[in-house]
Length: 593
Image (cartoon, rainbow, N blue to C red; front, side, top):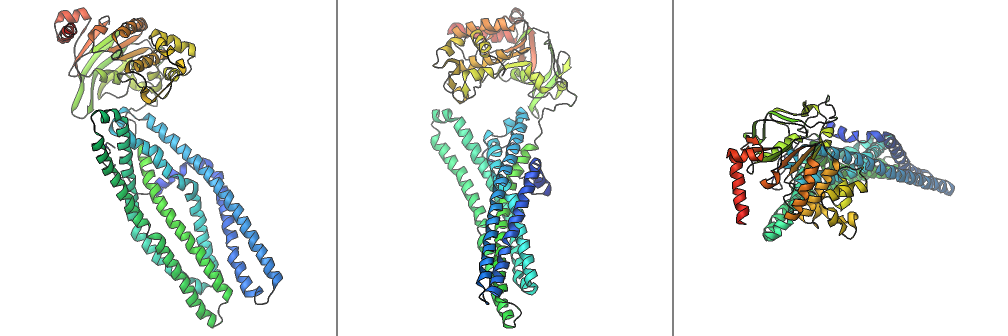
């Protein structure tokens, strides 16, 4: 699935009975409602088909004999049939819509839950905009299929076959001649169905590209404006938009051929009725009422054909979307959870990497045969040049990825034998890029532990020295923040996220550049809180500013995916290795500043 807005998504499997069965699976919990809907539909259909018979009897029996009482009775019967049919149709529509919306709700929930279970690599390989299209737009495309399409297909098919049966019951020879136009329609359908399927699938791809580009442009708007890229972005947007327009128009051109073609075939059938019916009238083999009833039944026959043609096109559009939905559903998480995995309980905090090798892409190894062991309650600082593999170590420990070789153990248990939920509940992570959700400051901190009280949240906020800042806001902890915290400074966002991590009270703490975006005064205050919170807790601290990690129990120096050296600050400085070089460069730089 690796692609961008510039690349169309790959074709997936053609429409199959299995795919339709998967869609119908979401209607299974509502089969009682579906059966009632179908019963109402059949009742409405049969009631509608009484009309032409009543019309035939009026023309052939009551009008020639001027039987006004009979005409009045048959008119009232026809009116009653229409009213009853209207009632059944209205009830069918309401129930079908409610059932369809419930099925779509279940499908959207299942898809979103599945997406949340996928691994980090997946989200790095596909634009967020394309995922949004599948969860929102593609499922919306199934709306008509679930609420109207499936039930209406039964409705129209029953009308079509019932009308055909009635014509054969009334006059078999006239019915045979009248329906001789059906093979013409079937040939038209057979010729164009592949083209329609192909074009609507292409439309969904281009819409996906458009959404991916819009999402990327809006998310990076600050960079766009900073580099005055508006004109170039506008050019790219128009190119992507033109692709959507052109693909849509090609699909519409093919679709638009159906309506007039079916109408033409219907008119041809009506001409046949009048031509052949006139010949039969001449030899007294048919009555005028039969000819009129046939004309009405023919309309009842071809109207469902026209509707089914629309539903067929709708089905092809829905199938193009469902292919993409189920392709996403079939995406397997790279992090496999064993059925025998057990919860991580009463964590002591020992961590071991045993001969761990890892790469994000084949042929580009990030960690080489990494071995180390951390004792419970120990604070380990991880330093090294950019790209050396520092963040990869904590990503593997959090099991965002699995190693290619070797094992990672917590308290002697392989991570692969531990449930993912319990593992991550025991690990608190403060990442380099602090993420703030739209909502209140209180809710953003509470995200670390949803059952936390407001008093506990305030206590944690004081510990990380963010309480005073929050108190200065108009609504305090109930102040609304924008998406990604755009109305906060980077430092403020980082402090709120730090409070979130500390509220979770994890057994193992990971700080990835946790103080990188705060000013010197706040960093000093925060460092005191960190020192206190690290006591008795296994901690991994990644920092580029080496002055912040001098008090770590041990410092692990990573270089080109290997552990170059490990020891206390004093030991590593005295060794005059890579750490000594890094420390000396920073010391000279700070003095120069």
